[in-house]
Length: 262
Length: 220
Image (tube, rainbow over all chains, first blue to last red; front, side, top):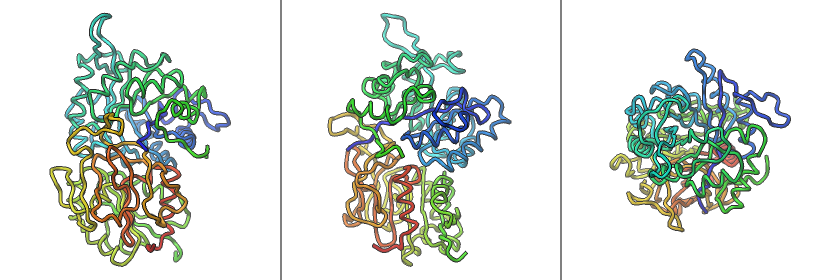
């Protein structure tokens, strides 16, 4: 008997629509985040992460309505990230039904924001999302740096120091994305994952680079991740969530397996 | 309407009550959910949900300021079904170690303790466990109860907490879970049922438990 490792499908949304769409069989609207969330939940997803990439703040109103609609129909935990910059942004998302918010750029710009957020709303709902890139040269000890703006802007912050500091400030979970691996489908940066997981006491979600089910299992077994996040392998129907869970369970990983598909 | 099932979710300003209200509303067309801090409205409801998220000190301050302690005491005295969730459950105990020791409502005997007690928390294989305890863990039903109806023993529910209840009265423990140590996942006393996990976030099993609560008359 033990806590299960989690599988978290991630929906990237722009103006309330899932970007790139989702290829499920017989789905009515491949861009509707509410229907997609419901499908994933029924398939056994352990949580849903909703990443808002809407550029303009005026259109964020749409996101709030979408979060409300998901939370009204999907009864598993929901994390909302993207554009969370103020305590008022957090309150809005929690009131809309989000269970956690993911803070990324705003944490780098103003680290005290994370402390204030954790004090006000509790660590359990504050996820700090970090985008890390390897900066050490071959032959050197591994070193990763925090980047913002989709991996384009270096911050000079050492990734391990940074996650320790964020947890010290009250982050309840770390969403760790390897910018080297994101979109590559060659697997997580397991060394990065392991280093971060060993550096902090809070759960770490591995993200970036998943191309097959072995990558998910490796993230947990070799990377020390408490949860694995993936988008495209599920969205495009390459693998289903029950398949992924069974595959991981067969490798001895504790998983929440549903008695039936429904 | 006369045959409406009125559920009050106690609102003391601490976090996301939308989820639990929506989850209950999704179960039946005959249920009316009010999210409220109004004592009269709460005490007129057929059943009461006492939720809670966040840090215990802030929660307790608001609970006392709004007189939620008296409301819950009165509801239980009247044998009205009450479901306490997460920090709502912890608030019922004697005291919590969180925020440098906080006195709680002292309605049930027992303490609220930090996982690992300040030391590294290890599993049976000596692996380090992360805190908060976050995710889906199994709940062992330690006594039969109407709220476990159609919920299989050792079903997984969603937890997120760094402090856990150590019950003072073993007969009140309705369910346990294990994370480095065995802890109290559910408590039962008269018309009060308290859970550490979040039924409103525990998909089918959680909705079943909430549905059981909607049909519970508060007796065993």
